[in-house]
Image (cartoon, rainbow, N blue to C red):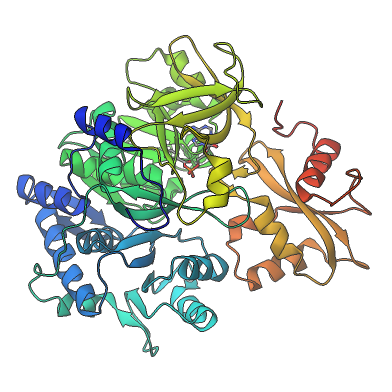
Length: 551
Ligand code: OOB
């Protein structure tokens, strides 16, 4: 296995193979198989482009051959930051076929996050779009390279704008000629790509997912969701996130021979028009987007849309309020499926034969019969059935450790290999999970995860900030928003100034505090070293008593 990763113990790996979960197929071979079976069917739609399975397969081969000519090969890491365009899928499969590892960044990430990912993974290449929503990724990529001294190759989907040092992906593909020849034969038990975790302490951790484990979660998810060749899935969320990628996401749709339509943004105006035009059957959203869709259709600007093709709306990434959940069928005319997943592995789904109240009030049950679930108290002891506790899990598609993070792994995983999710849940008698809160130090801003101390570290870089604690404050729309409590030096900066400062440092917009409150001092935390974690908890208790706090 890739250095810096934790393999499953052999007895678990053997069991997962015996039970047919790990089949020894690679992601590259998976697409090849689908290209044979579904050759001329439409795999991908992005604006006016429609790629068949055969075309996607050929493009992936040619791009793989072109990347190999650049010297990119097995084990190399390649940071991929692309919006929802066909190339995000093409590049991923090209890399899988080379045994090179995509490191998935979100389109919202900026210089700070991308520099970190490139240096932490010693990336050989960075793949970006040209411009999107008024942001120039090419300039950012060049700044990243200037700052970090790497990566050697910066590939651009679209126009390089004549900037030296950038290579158009188009040219890489052309130089790949007719394709195959370049493809390696990666070990299916080895890491296929690195997925970003939401992060709790400091910088985001990277999650190594193997061909075997990931394809199992894809197949299991596609089966639970009953996808088939008639499925037309709208990828409304950024395609590189685990939810739209594998739960069942675009890979699940490919597994079944359906069609994936890429949406440029998850907003109701864009997506509801696409549902009508492309006869979408399935889609996935985070709760705030789902609420915007409900309001847009329920007497709003999109009330005229014909949504009769839509069969299932999946909602996950953050808790979906039962009141909103109950509106889905009457307003959108489709079924709701709640999805509670994590990039580390475990995914829970409500099932289509669950009673309506179970679908409205629970976050589903595990995808695999071999997902092991434990609900424990703060000592790690199992709580009685139905009581609140922290969810721990292990199973055939849940990783055993983060990439290059031995110290963090010692805390994030138990000695017997369970992942401590940091989610506070209770189980129902039917085995469904209800997410009630969180024990981990993370803010869930409508599905986007923010690690408080990553933001605090940036705030402390401002000369007017003596100390900072970032906490969640409840919000009816996003579930939670971020509030930065600062102890100013002198007059201290206003929010606008701090926001500008953080943007200047290259921090993604969703991590910029929504509110800034100046305080004279943080509550005393007792003697000894000042812990910002304790400070945060004290501030949270003092200023936001109804925020989600551990019991
Ligand atoms: C998904 O993955 P991540 O890695 O961005 O975030 C995982 C965390 C979970 O540990 C939990 O804290 C929260 O997001 N979460 C939910 C939830 N789904 C995720 N909290 C409450 N209710 C839900 N339905 O967010 C993700 C990955 C695959 C599928 C779906 C979501």
